[in-house]
Image 1 (tube, rainbow, N blue to C red):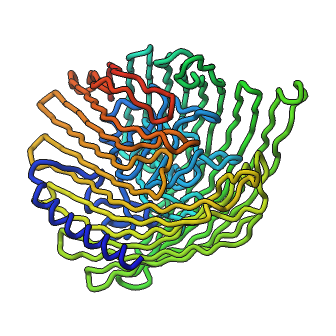
Image 2 (tube, one colour; image 1 turned 120 degrees about the vertical axis):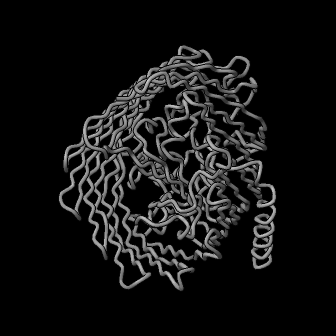
Image 3 (tube, rainbow, N blue to C red; image 1 turned 120 degrees about the horizontal axis):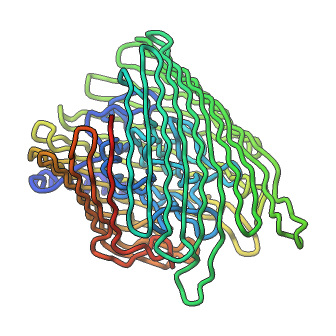
Length: 612
């Protein structure tokens, strides 16, 4: 391990030197060097002082995409992250579902090793422990912060491979504001959105409604979703604020089945997902914190007879105290109860069968300290204790540093443990094992952040090693066991260039070396995007190269390589209206991210965006 670590450091420093030499012609990170983030520390902190690798996809990048779901927007823009798809829209659930998320080769099928958050509270189905990606609507999102590596010290279970924190919009400017868009394109794809906000003095409200539908590019691949969202804000005083939000989404989808000879149509689904949360924040000169209450719920119907109700509710409380200059101590507690009811109404000749009707609790307490020394070095260390109703206790340590080598250069390194509690399905449902232990990994990473040419060029280079040997896998004749292992290592690079006025270039690259192929994880992933403003015209284009992608969760031998080219043209006709035309997969590449589910060729969309 010492030899591997020294080799990794050598590669990183030599690569940084090389990167500075080639930087005059390419470049962009998903986040500014001095950007403030919260996901890596729970309190607002300069990104350069967080030892772990954090990427941010901002509102401008989200708005420039034609995607109505936020997860595909992250593909390429966040190095080391990949999300599977199976059509124009709609990920689905159950057999042949897409929307599997992998960060550095850690994810799972379904995704239980990457934690999805909305404004800091966990989002996943109570029975199966995985997120429902169709419910994450892009129009409600202000930005997305991604921790590329374990964040279990702060967020507990499922933050094993990383965290995706969707930060929702709020009305911040006085008065009334409204937005909307209409979009139509290939395969009778239609997207409609309207949103509005109002703020007066200490009270604010933001609301949106979306409806998307498509016939799909294959027979029996139709999808439709309707989503509503409301957020209320109240500035109680100079130091206290409160907010409450509620979201409800209903969607239907059909699984077209594998794209093979004599393929049989899969199941149809009818799903309701929703959540509400209440948050109270305090912000004083020497301490700040949050108390958040949340409730997530859903009901699923699948045409094979499966029916379930699930819930996931809890509370997160933390407080950050500045004990003395350069020091911040964060202490927090969280509690979560998750579970539900699942049955098959058509089983037993129509009499039905109940799979489970239960819930479990998971609670944690943690402390995390940041210490600034000599105006150059920031030390970070923390410890969490997690108590689970079934398996008992688990200790989770984390530590690292960020060192400012110069005004524009920061060196970061960290060691962190990530873990995941077994799901109710793994404990009590099909092929279950109530004696399972939590999964865990150890992640080692180090990296350099660099800005050049008066911050017009920004770079980040990170190297990592991930090891774990107690992953939950299905062992023949034994069922689920803590017998799986992972051994991944790789390099992530991202860059941003604004050297030429009105031209922005973005570049990311990730290499992940895996001891054995990991589903939904390419070996090489390269993304290059650009935006060019010319008076009332805006041009967006991107090219993405995927190499050695494992597209089959069961056989681990299906390796895909392909290149995608996308483009978008926008004309700002009026102050309140702009028209756009976008085309995806301009090379008409035949490819899959889920085996036997061929993605569409060239697709074209056009529409109008309105703003008041």
